[in-house]
Image (cartoon, rainbow, N blue to C red; front, side):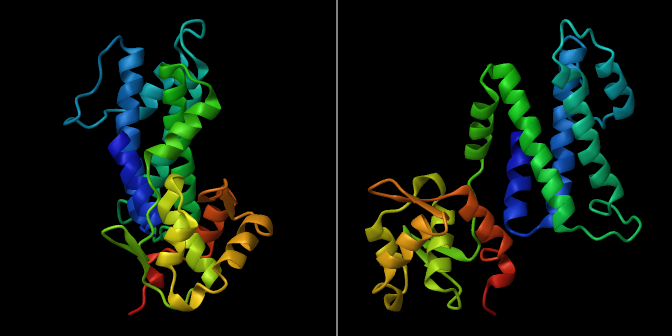
Length: 241
């Protein structure tokens, strides 16, 4: 399940919307087996054997004793998995169906559901608060920017058209929770960007809230991540040909 989750997120960040949905289906197949294990006293469909009837399994889970099983196991997780499964099977992501092309809307829904389901499993079986479970999920998969190439620790942006603020946010997106020092960013940006780098970073921190500065390192914020993704600054289509 973790492998499928990681691949779905990786493909989503790289623009592989169809592959995200396919991996979402693999995630569901693993998650349904975990629910089988829970509902059937340790028994589950072997990995090499297809799941027989997920609708029947969802019904069986809904009929579990509510005093013994959490509602997420009985109701919420199974129904969420059904949604992802249907997108995978009926929206032309894994088969030739009715001509529906995979799109960002479908892929985004799949990724959000996968994150939520994984967080619920972590919350339930590791007995942590919901916000802590979400934080763990966020840390499982490192965001990747195909427009950034790492040369033994030197991050090079492969798109000379980016402005200095875009350049910095993409670098920090790539760095994730590790962030970067001013000296690192100064070294990685293009020479012509260095003169006004401090002013640019201050604006990203104080005016746009795309970046946070803790006194020694710069970190991209959730708002900054959303900006980088929605602006298409990291996708493969941005690479110069």
